[in-house]
Image (cartoon, rainbow, N blue to C red):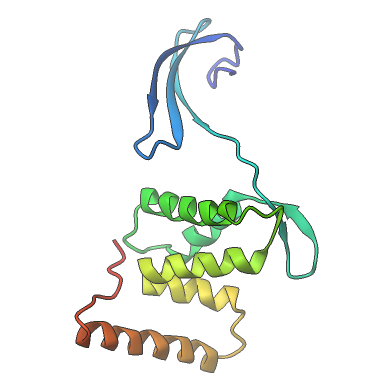
Length: 165
């Protein structure tokens, strides 16, 4: 591990802790040259499937792409980055649990839609408008009407719509 301050390659681990969810290890390190401390996070490298894109191309699974889409959908919404990390973790786990060597990008998109629908309706509609490639305002309005209908069902049925927190 290279020191981020002086690029020296030798350092020592001062402290190691498991993350709250148990998926990562947080390590405090000290550079043996400059003496500065820094933190690293280790995640288990798991075998994730190749993603089959709409045009038939195949590419390596990229968690960052899902996170980027979710971040864009949740921009200026009251949702913490930790909440979004857990959301992406759940999507990744479901994709991995399928046990397939390849997965269609539409599967990942639908899983993302489910998660956003449960989290925040505004973020859900933002993501859906891009993911489903709405061609006109009518498709957008149809999606909104469906959400409004669900909200009424939750209110009369005793349930609650997503709070966004």
